[in-house]
Image (cartoon, rainbow, N blue to C red; front, side):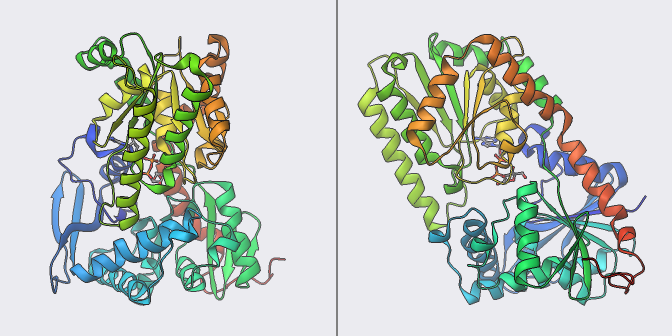
Amino acid sequence: MARLVIVSNRVASPKERAAKAGGLAVALREALSQRGGLWFGWSGETEVNPPEAPKVFRSGRVTYALLNLDPEDQRAHYAGYANGTLWPLCHYRLGLLTFRRADWEGYRRVNEHFARALLPLLKPDDIVWVHDYHFMPLAKELRKLGFEGRIGYFHHIPWPTPEVYLSLPSHAALVDDLSHYDLVGLQTENDVRALLTYISSEIHGWIAPGGTVGLKDRRFRVAAYPIGIDAEAFVSDAKKSVGKDEERRLNESLAGRTLAVGVDRLDYSKGLPGKFAAFGELLRSFPEHRSKVTMMQVAPLSRSEVSEYQALRRELEELGGAINGEFAEFDWVPLRYLNRPFQRATLAAIYRRSRVGVVTPLRDGMNLVAKEYVAAQDPEDPGVLVLSRFAGAADELKGSLLVNPYDIEGMAAAMDRALTMPLEERQQRWRTNMDNVETNTIHHWCQRFIDELTNVTDQFGPAGDTWGNARPQ
Ligand code: ADQ
C-alpha cells in the first residue's frame, strides 16, 4: 500500500487527545496510522531566516514534519492572502476582501518553501493529500521540483460562483495552480458546478463526463466529497453525558427551561449577528417563549489578529448585551454567550439537552456542528435543527428547518416552529438527518478521497497524451 502524506497548515500534535483535536484531525491521524504516513505542516512558530528543513519526529507509525516560517511571510500567507483574500472571497463577502500584491507574493513564497522542504521527504509512489486554501499552489511547486506522484487537494470552504470568483485579481493563476493536482475535492455538487463553469466559460478548459478537466496540457478530476463527522463518537459521548456532573449542572442552571444552542467559531461567515437578532425577534414576536427559552451561543475566538474579527466580537457583545438588557428577568438571562472552547463530551451534552440547534451561517463549506447536533440527540425525544440553506450541510440534512440567514423574521418563525413541533414530526425529521450522518461519516469521506486519489490517474490514459485521440465535446 502506498504511503499517505497529509499536508495542512495546522497539524494536530500526536499528544492531543481525541476529544480535543476534533473529528477531522482524528480521522486523518487514523488514516495515517493505518498505512503509515507523514503529516507535514506549519509548526506554529515563526523566526527570521527559518531553516529550509522541517523538524521531524515520529509517533507510532506516523512521522510528523513541522516547518517554521519567516514572520513576514507567515503574516502575508495566513492573515494576508489566505484569510484576508481567499476566505472572504469564497464566503461571498466581497466587501471584506483585500488584495495586496505583497500578500499574494508572500502566499506563493510560503508554498514554494513548503514544496522545497517537503520534496526530500517524498517517495515516488507516495499519495500526497493537501488540505485547504492555504496551499492551492503546492502541487505546482512540487511538480516544478520534479515530483510526479499523485497529489490531491481538498477545499474545505465553499467554491464561489464565477461572477464572485472573477473579483479575485489572481483568479486564473490560482485555478492554473489547481490543475497541477490529480484530484480536486470540493464539499458539494454546487461547488463543483461553480468551479467547472468558471473553467469552461472563462479560461478555455474542457470538461469530460465524470468531472475530468482539461486545462492547457493537463488533466485533473474535480468531484464533490461532502465531509462527515465521527458519528459513533458523538452518539457515545452524548449518551455517556446523561446523569453526569456536567449534565446535572446544566439542568440545574436551566431550572426546567428549554434550551436552544449555537456553536460556531467567532467568524463573520457564521452569521452570528443575524442569529442574535433572530433570537431577539423570537422573544419580541412570540412573547410566549419569554422566560421559557434560553439560548446558549458558544463562540470560541478565532483569527483575533484580523481586524474584521475584532470588530465582529465587539458587535456581538453589544447585540448580546442589548437582548439581555431588553428581555432578562431577575431569574432568567435569555442569552448565554461564551467565548471559550469545550471538550467534545461537554459539547455533546449541551447539544443533547437542546431542543433546538441553530446553525445559520451566511455561507459554509459544510458545517460540522449541524451534523454533531443531529448525532447527539436522544432518538426518543430529539431536538430540531434550524439550518441555513447556504451551509453545505443543507444538501444532505433534509430533515432540518431550512432558513435564509438574511431573513431575521423568517429565522425567528423557524425557531418558534422548532420549539413547538410535535414529538412525532421531530422524530421523523431527526431520523432523516441521522440516516445521512451515520452513512456518510468522516471515515467514509477519508477512505473515499484516498481511494479515488489512488486510482485517479488511471482514468487519464497514457501520460503525456492529453485527451487520447478524441477531444471530448
Ligand atoms: P469551520 O469553519 O471551523 O470548518 P465547522 O464545520 O462548523 O466549521 O467545524 C467546527 C468544529 O469546531 C466542529 O467540530 C465543532 O465541534 C468544533 N467547535 C466549535 N466550537 C467549539 C468549542 N467552543 N469548543 C470545542 N470545539 C468547538 C471548516 C469549514 C466548514 C467545514 C469544515 C470541515 O469552514 O464549512 O465543515 O472546515 O471541512
